[in-house]
Structure formats: structure tokens, C-alpha cells
Length: 545
Image (spheres, rainbow, N blue to C red):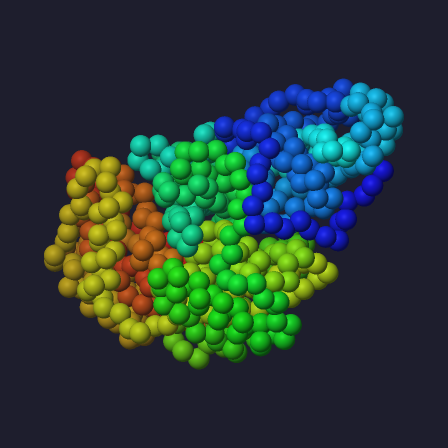
């Protein structure tokens, strides 16, 4: 019996898949097939394990690679094979067994001869619960067995990962944890990213979202993340490889964003190397360069081992503290507004091209690293064995803002979000001037947003008497506002809003805040609603990294 060379990884520019991948994404149950079926079925008895079509495909594809090359596929190829086969994964793995020089034995005789070894391998590789796929593949004189496995508690309703007539792919599922927010993001083209639109009529723990894709893309990664109340760091619920072109994948093709080069070992040199390489990619994407912030990169380098350990240990309290310490941007001398953080873990990849490809494979990485609004970047990394952990943050340098222009932008966003009623909200001209004046006071630091919305609410009540609600909404950005359901569900509503920029009490940077009051006329859902004891604060900047 031969062993896989575990210290090596097979890397290639192109690789043809074997056979046809499943038509659906999801855990579709299937029986174990092939010469290992009786043995594997016996091992499965008493385990809460589902054999799926997707993972059976994964096992077959990886067995073909191992049997042909004698090595495991590299991280990029593994990621693609799980996705291409339709496996909805967050963390997937596999175990292997193979034997060489058995061309004289047919499958039945081979399984009989190595039955004890194979049973031992299957008993150790098949988990007590979760999802698996088992495949045995012959390549020349080699016989290779792979068990692919995941352990997903959350469920995805099986679906064809192709867009409908509206150019969107619809994903439905159910989460187990009591998340406050579930979000989806999807890649578009080689550089773009878009947020998926949630169906407001579907309530957690169920979710349904529509993801806009680019029809010319052969494949596109989509991620679903869940955030517990008040958390900035979310859980990866699932990663899905969609098929925007409508065609099933038949080939793995390596994509490099930058030329191959060894990663610099010195932290300062690595930060400069990464930012230089990223600016090459941003140029190709048609967005401006980012400036490396060396002092903040030093902080990223110091904090990265602590964040990596907290994430590995699932210590969310500690991870949140480390994340907030980095996102705060205390070592950024320039004034900034808005920012985001991302991290990437790679295994055995010492090349800057591999790192960049992995970082930009996922929508979250693109959101931070290729964000056209960001012009400042800090990056640091830590290494533990073969594991490389990259921590990166991007910020938007604050160059001032226009209350009038930003307020119009927010109003347009709300109008678009109210497409269900196909009409914009009404306005309250008697309140608008006061809203603008209070926003100016928040900008100047003379008043907090909480005090401003309280004053605005009292003034609005003096004009309209009843049916009033008020909000202070802190959006992630003005391009990404999650409006309160009350504003979306009411057939008729009149609003007054103004956008201010408030200094964040916990961070070194400022945040945009929407001061909004709404009047719901008589005979409407919220008519007669008394003025709340205080403003409704909606902080969307804390739900997601």
C-alpha cells in the first residue's frame, strides 16, 4: 500500500472533471455505489450521516486527482471541487486510502484482500453525524478511496444554481442558531461583488434571498453569513458555487490576479508587497489605489495571532475585542469614515499570487480589498505551521460631506426599497428645515445623534400630533441601508430625514447617521402610535465585518 505525499499539493492551470456533476446544490441523499458499497453501508449503520450526491461527486473528483498525481489537490482546487459538485459547505474535508500495483486484481478481489484496512479507514473517516460521500477510483494500477465529509447543521433547500429570467439566483434555507441577521453576498465577474436581497416575508430561522449574478460568469461564489445580536463577527453559514451561465462546470481553471512571487517574511515588507500587488488588481478593476498605513499595519501584525487563536477557539468575546481594536483605527492619523475588516486563512501557500487569489475568491474579501470608496489599507499576518492568517482592513478617508446630497441619496434608497407599493414616501416640508439644522449640529459635534433625533421627534409631533415614529439609523454605508420594516410595509408614510456624520464614541473614526421621523396617517397600520420614550437606534455597522 502506498501513501499520499501529504507534504505536497498538486497545482495546475487546468484540470478536466470526471463525468457529470450533480444538477442541484444541496444535500440530496443517494446510496453508496461501487465496490465499497456493502462495506461502507455497514459502517454507516447507527451513524447520523447522510450520503449525498454532491459529496459523492467530490470524493470521485479528488480520488481522480490523487490516483493520477499521487498528491492532494491544492487549496484552490479543493475549494473548486467542493463547489463545482454542488456541495453547500462552510468547512469541508476528506480522508484518503490508496494502493498501487493491483492491476491484476478486479475490484471485488481487491476489496476482499484489503477488507480489514478499508473497514478501519472508513470507520475512522466517516463521522458520527453530518454528510459524506464515498468513492473508489482506479487509475492505471492504482486504486484510490476518498471519503469527503462536511457537518452542516444548517440546511439549504436543494436548488438549481442558475439564474431565473430576472438574472437572479434564489437561495432558500434554515439556520439553527438564533441569528438576528442573515446576509448573502455574491461575486460578479473577476472583481465585483453584490449583496443578495432578502425576502422580507420569510422570517428567521427560515431565509430566502435573491442574488444578482453576471450571466457571462461560468461560476460565482455566494456566501451566507449569520450574525447574533450585537455581533460584528458572523458565522459562515454556507458557501455556494453558483452557475450564472446556466452550464454545469466541466473544468477547473486556475485564476491568478498577480504574478507569482514569494511572500515577504518581514512584516513591513509584506505589508508593502501586499498593498502594491493589490493596487495592481484595483487598477484592473477600474478603482483607485489604496495607500498603505504602516502604523495600522503594525497593529494588524500584532493583533493577527490573537484574532486567529480566538477564531480557532471559537472565543467570540475575545475575537470581538480584537476586531474592534483593529477596526477602531487609532493608529490612522488621517480622519476616516466607514471601514471594514476581513481575514483569510491559507494552508501551505507561500506565494503572493495564491494569497491574493484566495482573498479575492470570496465576496467579503472583495468588499474590503476592492471597495472603490476605500483609499487607506492596513494588513498584517501570522503563521502557525502551514497555516497563514491574513488580517486586512480598509477605510474611507473623510473629506467632508454634503448634508443635502447625502439626504437625497438616502431618500432615493428608501424610495427604491418601497418598490412593493411603487411610489415614494411622502414628505414633511414643515420638518425638513429642522432636520437639516439638527444634522449640522451633529456634524459640528455640538449635539449627539441621540439628542438630535429626540429633538426632531418632538418638533414633528408638535406639527403632526400623532402617528409618529423616529429612528437614528447607522448604515454600513449610504449605498447599503437596511430600512426598518415599518417604512417598507406601510402603504402610506410621510417622512423627513437628514444625514449627519457623528464621531463614533468607541472608534477613531466617524459614522454616517440618518435622522428620520415618519408620520403614518389615520387608518394606516401605525396611525395613532404614541411617541416612543426614546429614539429607535438601528446600528447596522455592528452586524457584520
